[in-house]
Length: 285
Image 1 (cartoon, helix red, strand yellow):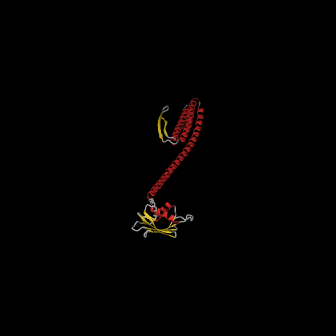
Image 2: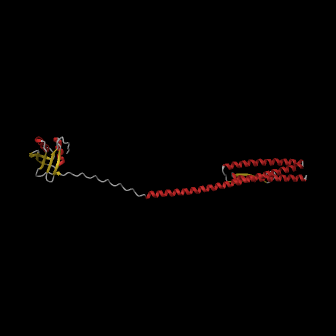
Image 3: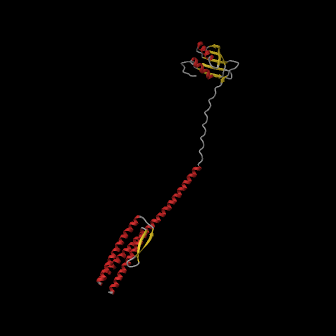
């Protein structure tokens, strides 16, 4: 009976050690994968336990799911250990040989659990390494974003300086004034009448028509024939206002319908020579 009691105590101690190892591994998995508040129970007596709380930072959603799967697996093994412990206790009461067989089964289970712990630790190491690489990548991206932002600020500042330093566009040069139309010299009223010579006069009636037209101009007071011979006539015209040779020609055309050419115009001498244009010649004044 002493041997059976010692064996029972060893089995229970071994099982409690495995359960404690499972709890510690679960705490480590939680701290590496999902974080938060994790409540674990540390055995103090045979039937009591004391709860303790650990707070860890929370990672991403995929790591949380992996931790939940691992926790379910470990709970399953813990249930198996408890069932096996109960079986060992029942067997120890009836047969020492059954206790020895249960010890062998517990040893196999311990070996299996240890192998699983090793695989879990390897998985945790890989997850930790991947998290470190992601953290380094995030740091590199943040540094690159800072360099890009600095470069954009430099470009913006350079554009602003170039815009402020751009010289003002010169005002368009004023259009050159159009050349002034030369003013035609005018005959001035004076003490002596203006002398008008008509060449190629179309008959005496044509001469009379021209005399009346000259007398009717706004700038004249009257006109008189001085001489008429061989189709050429001389007239004296008294002016009451300055008048240009072109004005006299236009007035005669409007009054008589005759076209006249200006052959000579000397306002300073008071002399004007005009020539009648034959109607069928096609010439214009």
